[in-house]
Length: 180
Image 1 (cartoon, rainbow, N blue to C red):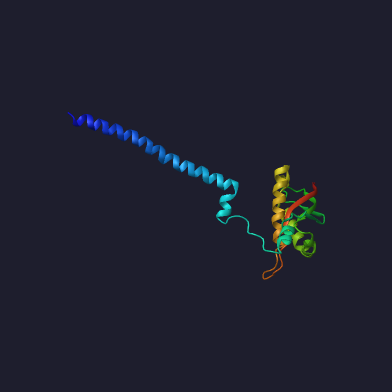
Image 2: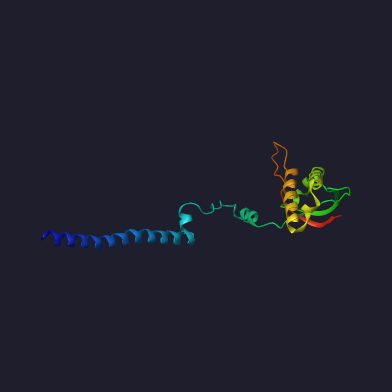
């Protein structure tokens, strides 16, 4: 009979020690995660891991600061486009579109002027395949804008083997859209 009370005391001792072990196994990772998160969000840990911004070389500080300064966008006026839409019925439906291209650099205006025939062709081809109901509402205007930006960037892509950076159109701003 003396074995039974000893076994009961041993299991009670194991339960008490097991609770402390569980607490220790949970508390240590939580504290480590908290410390790691604190170091990460204060910016210390990314710097220690080499994930911070690269240090500027001597003499390059002024040019790096000038390059990092945001440039104001430049705008390029597109010629007026009048074309028919893809309308079902006997009566033709026309669209008159005046727009501006928002470009990243003002120096790209010459490249855009040189690519103007391709730009106008891509814009008119897209508009001729557009149905009048697709241009209704703000969602239709947004879809048209997105499609024209994509087509403008395709038209302005440099020829293969060119080392010159391609002009980039960031937005098409509508001055006038008239569907009649």
